[in-house]
Image: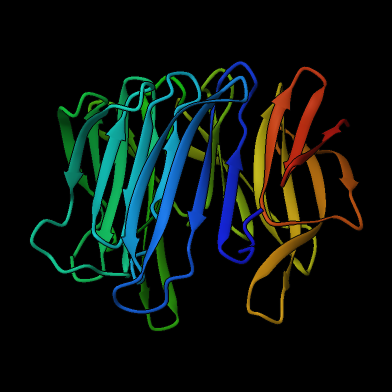
Length: 320
C-alpha cells in the first residue's frame, strides 16, 4: 500500500462508507533539476470522488502529508519541507494557508504535525534550529486561537480529543545517550494541565473522554483525564515486535504489536501482528496472533462486531 510501483504510488485511507475518506496518488520518478512529480489528493464519500487537489512538485520536494476530518470532509495538506499548510473545505475550495517558518530556508529536519477536529485544528511545529517545539491552535476558518511552547526542541506527535477539549503534544531532546521526552496536555483554551513521560506515536481517547492511551514503540501508558496523571503502564510482550496501534473497545482497550521486516531495498513492512486486550486497570483479558500476514499500513477500528483490523486493502474482525 505504501510501496512505490514504478511511477505511481497510491495510498487509500478508508474511514467508513458513510463518512469522508481520501485517496492520494504520487506520480512521477523525477530525479534531477527541471524534473517534477505530481501529487493528487482526492476526497471521497460513499466511495465516490467528490474533488481532487493536484500539486506539481520539484524532484527534491517531499510529497505533502494529508489529513481529513471524516465527519466534515475538511482537508489539510502539510508541506513539512517548505513549512506551510493549506486548508480546504469539503467542496475543494481553499479556505486559508499558513507558513510556520516564513523567511526561513527549506529544511528536512523539522516537524509539522496536525490534529484536525470539526471546529478547530491544532499544529505541532519544530525546527532543528529553533529552541522549542510549539503547539498552534486555529479555528477551521483560519482564525488563530493561541500558541504555546513545549518543553523540548523537537516535536513528535499531536492528537486532539473527539470533543476538542484536550490536546496532547509530544516533544523530545536527545542529549548524549539520554532522551528527554514529554507528552504535554493542554485545554482548548491553551492551559497546560499535565505532562506524561512518554514519546508517544499514537494517542487515543476513550469513548467517554475519561481516559487516554498513549503508545510508543515499546510502552503503553494510560492517563486519567480527570487528574491528568498516569494511572498505568505496560511494556510490549514480545522480543522482536513494536507497538503499532491501540484502540478502545468499550470498557477495555486492544493494543497491537507487529514484527518489523526490512527489505533488501531498505524498505520495511510489518508482519505477524498480535493483539492483546486489557481492562482499564491494565489486567490482561485475551490475546490473539495472526501468522503469515504482511502489510505496509494497518489500523485498528472499534465496531459493533468487535475490533476491525484493517491492513492495506483488507480487514479482519477481531473478538476476545
